[in-house]
Image (tube, rainbow, N blue to C red; front, side):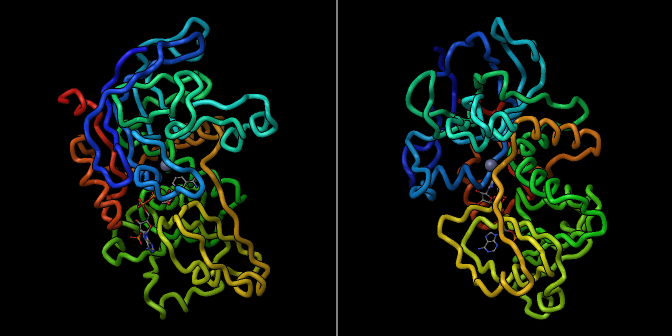
Length: 352
Ligand code: NAP
Ligand code: ZN
């Protein structure tokens, strides 16, 4: 084991402070990574504050961070895909059982034995896994992604969660050419959803609670913007969408968005509010509409998404911060005041 600098929270109400954690020595299959950038996902906030306690209670100290980009510093003897100095990424998972039907189908995120990057039982060291708000991490090579050389690394980090979480359901929907796609919420996930839906040829509309984001939504690729509190604007679009991706992190009236769907339309939830949503049966029945969910994406699909981003020059729009500003960043995340993802420059951790 070796010691690594990190930022942790000690309880659901504590601020982040500097900490030191143990990382395992590089075993045969492992890649040791110096972390360069780590995105701040709203899931980090839900977990740090134990908002998902009924489903996935948080073990403290908690070190979130699952949008990791870094440089390889060491590889184990049997590692074949990576070498020292390669630029790589790590997303929401660091291991799985590799044998179950989900793993065989490349859907490791649904493996009952999957190990998530943080707050998941750590098979090597005991306790729970610690995420990317740290100077380094050690990961099985099968969960390490190749980062295309042509992209800005601060903007690549969020692709490892916000990117794959929106790419996967949008891509899976089928041919979106000319289809009307709605993205609900222009935050970290939402702004990536806009970029992907546009890249796949859809007519893209953003639903937002923040009128001041209108110009940015258009710049990011939306064809139109609907202010969700404006009944007239909402009414004009009712029954017209083929597909809607709901990224809202808090409780909201999902029926308002189901009503936007046309016949056989689908709304997919990726946002994970802490309290259950109330769904009107009638909103779904009339028009044979469907409601589904989607969780990140598998490892092969994540690599496919990164390669797609390299080809289409897609990265996240980021506000780069030093780790010392993390508590302020969390406060702003709760106010939907992010343009459009915080990316932590981990070099700032050296000052601790
Ligand atoms: P984020 O950056 O905070 O963005 C969420 C956006 O939702 C906000 O910017 C805001 O957009 C809108 N919003 C916030 N509160 C709202 C409210 N009360 N009513 C209506 N709209 C509201 O968060 P994120 O990182 O994109 O994550 C979004 C959600 O997805 C979180 O719950 C997160 O845990 C979840 N998530 C799920 C997966 C998965 O695999 N399914 C992966 C990652 C994250 P406007 O200002 O435009 O209204
Ligand atoms: Zn995330």
